[in-house]
Length: 315
Image (spheres, rainbow, N blue to C red):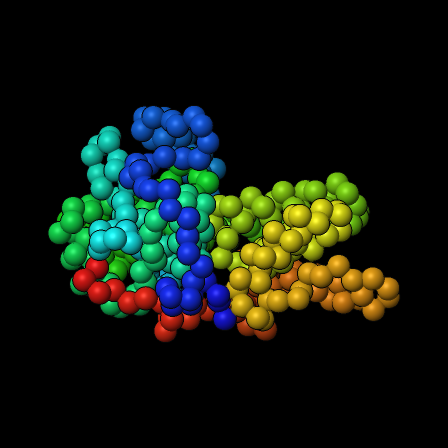
């Protein structure tokens, strides 16, 4: 289903500009470790003071109790040798492994940062040997699903210097809950707002800004985000923007091809409207905004194909 998951020999080669193994956010101004730590503390304090922390904990427990788990655990590895790619944290000294729960997010990081690296994936239950290898290499912390555009990140210390399956599952669940909560909050402001014209230039611009923010910070692996951006860009007459979003959408495979073409006449307008409806439904389902007959959120319809992901060999 996902073109990102093709074997290495079939994937498009990435641009190689070398690797600087430091925690470096995008842009020209690189904040100091203290500035990053201060920003993280302020963000955590804001969540705690708002009362959202208790709700996040409840939803995280609910997700864990449901039995859902990440399909894959991925990490980045240098092409020329088996060394995993890490971020070196100075204060206090830590060696943080970059871990991704989606190969699409991992490739997004590599391509944006222009790293000469490859994505290595494994099933969750096969994490043991790799975790021991990471500990041997001095990895005593990890960062999950780091966006290449994020100025701050959530750093977790490994338990006894060993990144455990339990830690990864909890971190995934907590991150998924926060991601969905943020998406629900933003999308409800758009789709539940009364007395507004969703096709007005102002609302289109607002929708696109929200979707692009979601895309860049944790939801690049959701094809419906790219789908909606492409459709909105088409309505705005932004052909380069539509083409860029369409290219990202169609990289998920043939099921997502031909969904955003600009069509004319009555039949074309109907096809465009149908495409918009499907994209919105997919978007709502992915972020837990649609409920089934049992009153529970409909599960995401997106699944990773584990069989085509390179297996760990010597980690």
